[in-house]
Image (tube, rainbow, N blue to C red):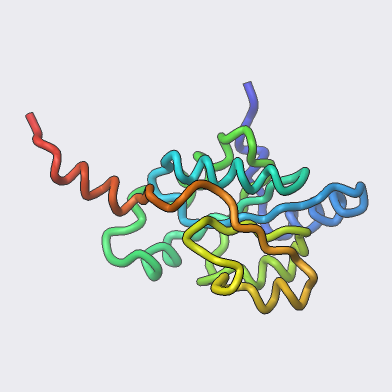
Length: 163
């Protein structure tokens, strides 16, 4: 059985890992998200991201960032639980937590070959588009249509009859 904790790395360690991957000729893909209550849409997004290269690094929003993006009452799961769940997926090679609102700084630090975003984005409205273009990072829109969301999952649980 694989020890997923080895996939959870600090930014400093990840910079060294990314440099080693680049030197070896591996194509690095970076994906990111909140991943609050992991669902099938997340899995398909990450599978699509992995298909774009050799090594998949996933940035997971820290708790304060999720609250800022999603509002009060979120995240449902704390950052360590969300990072561990993402790391448990076979297609994911490394996971890093980040406190910033977007991943511009991480793209600059890691310099992946591909920045993968879900189908709720277009190449034109990716928040990190300018820095990706400046660094020569290709943007890939991956995954299935955005008809899965944690918000909808939470709402369906609230409406379900109990008993």
